[in-house]
Length: 153
Image (cartoon, one colour):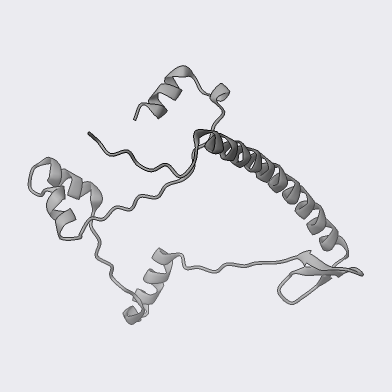
């Protein structure tokens, strides 16, 4: 006889928690919409009346707050162009050659029977990571087929 797992909640408690989770999720989405709308309005206001700093941000001071439209600039390489420019100048010390597995060709080798995935898992060359998220959807929003697929195990 199989040993039953100890369940930390009753079915009724789980139903209550799922209801609370679903309500909070809906509130969270509504709050995000409201924050985004207010943020857009404040940025327009700061852009119109704020004092600009050397970074291009504009700030406003009120009696209770300092707020503003912050400029955030990200800088990155266009790698192909940078590598070409460095190579043309003979500055290849700043260029790394990266060796990597071509996954399409690896799958082809598996299909041809030349390598086995299990042997690469065994040596630690292939790893996997599973994470878990909570799934909550109203029964009314699902078809009977979807419900059956989810709960049949």
